[in-house]
Image 1 (tube, rainbow, N blue to C red):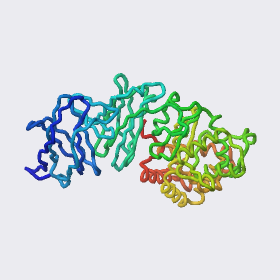
Image 2 (image 1 turned 45 degrees about the vertical axis):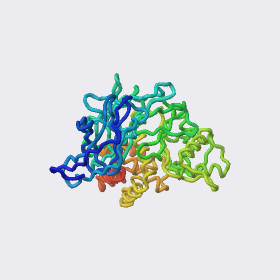
Image 3 (image 1 turned 30 degrees about the vertical axis):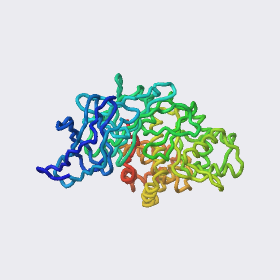
Image 4 (image 1 turned 120 degrees about the vertical axis):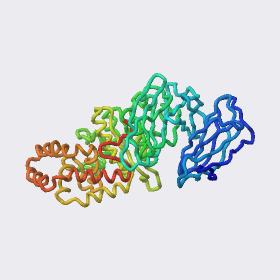
Length: 501
């Protein structure tokens, strides 16, 4: 590009052959790099027939501009939109005419053409994305539509954006709690209640950029390899049971931490058949490291929600195999699920942890409890998946005074956790602080938990009174410290793990 009258511009490039659109499903494409947005002028002979703003990016861009039937393209030119320090950074890599990507067809929205990026991103100047499926597969009983939206958020603080996903006769509104960096959110037609035909962002700014949109048919048939449904926590909470691929459970992968699997069980009985023995083996005071038969466990309560890291899962199944302990059919299914999704691996020496872990809850829990459980267990999932986050939380724990630590030992012992397991204690310390919004933390412990604890252990009244007197800001201070770490690492805040709600 050269500077002409204060504006950087390329020459007018001519196509080797002019192109007349005959099928209404073709596009002019341009491959380029540019640190800032530029203006694309398209020509038919000497006549400019279109000017289109192209986005800037730190990486290569393949941009498709749909051309309607009857249009004729013969040349193009690029001009800068400013004369700033990044003006003139445009570099042309390739250009020509090609088919629009499979699964979409070109439409005209009001007076503006859709702009299409090859991986499925269809955008207009109003941040509206429209897609028409060319296949009827999504309308069958055994399929639903999956829409994925890739975005990049560069803001330094928590920010919510409004969006609408819609069809001709329906719409559903969401708030997107944007996560820093690149993320993907998913929508499913069965949970939406309709097959979507478009999505529109009603509030955006320069910190937010959609980088891709994909639409595909998503099978509702059971997969023998237990492949998960990728989804955000908000979508998982609302995911309709009628779309489950099995009667007993559905398995999801968390969009923010794909190595954390979320298993939603039909009822407590199925959940217990799968995870109750694990809960005693890994976490229960007085039982850790022991494999208990079903008869022994029949009168004991496990958990209504669960979380286990890959290391604990490998230890359980290795111990069972070593002593030839008979596993429940549901536990064997879990093992296949863990191996199929590479939470565990298999070697000559036995099962080995790979990464991440699982969290679980049940349809039998109330909506309020399901939200609480998924939030609490979700923070455990972050602890399993983000090792630096876990290390930084441990530093917060290590900086507590002994009376502060003793409160948590007392609390967790009351909840029947194995308090000799330091990893478990730090993990629960973090999750119990983060499961609710910061604004609720003081009331939760001082007005609810501690009075309830003292009813059971009245002899601890003097100790608890001294703790509250000497450390009046313990809960709010440490919740803020952990939240600061969570936001710095993963753009996560206390009490809210949903991207979509």
